[in-house]
Image (cartoon, rainbow, N blue to C red):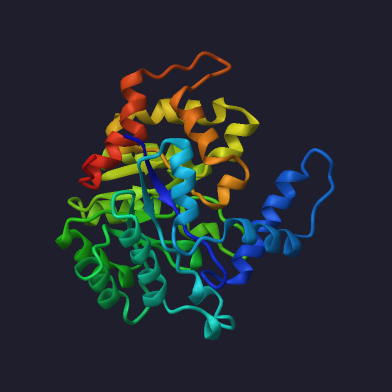
Length: 313
């Protein structure tokens, strides 16, 4: 079984336009790094949104079918408090999470979803409870780069509820385009939560990107911490060992059962199609001879996520 443990659905109005333009600005720099010629980020955003737009999950499931991915975990983002001027025209987080829940109802054997919300919202706890109890969502997703530290006491009531439900909490960690601020997403702030809630299963998204050593180090002392390595395609395409070395160290130190495959799709699929990313991780080829056993690959590609989320084939 292959499980993509980190996927988003994007569509017009799903997220602030400033966020999409920020992502396009990063893509423009990445695509132009060899030539020094950069595309207009606004035009790039409009072009790629037309390709990526997927309100129902139809495009995602088609890509999963092509890549041989069995299940995907959807993660709604809540950036709207970062953009108060745009919030008047946005979906409410109840509406957005309901759209994600509807995608899982449309594809009940393929898609699961966490509930995504900024814990600073006055109704965050009530909506989270609704998502779990009424819509069958499987955990909590938060994104601190919207402007809060994940160990802020304001977040604790929702962590307490997640622990009571016995569902995981996935927390973004690592880089993010402007105007999001990465200082809020350093793994050390997630460590505080793991210390205060030792029974709560916590996923450090993206393995902390550039803070991967810190993320792995924290996970060695906090057995309730998991690491997903989604969003590493840019590093992999620059040099495969930029992925294989951190991944090898993570597996060596905490074992494969707390390491989860993911894409950070659909946006990262523009850089590397889902099928290509799946094949790269299934058959790792290291320039310096770093190796993984077939059993390790099988676990990180799906068995670990299936165990964490109680997914049955």
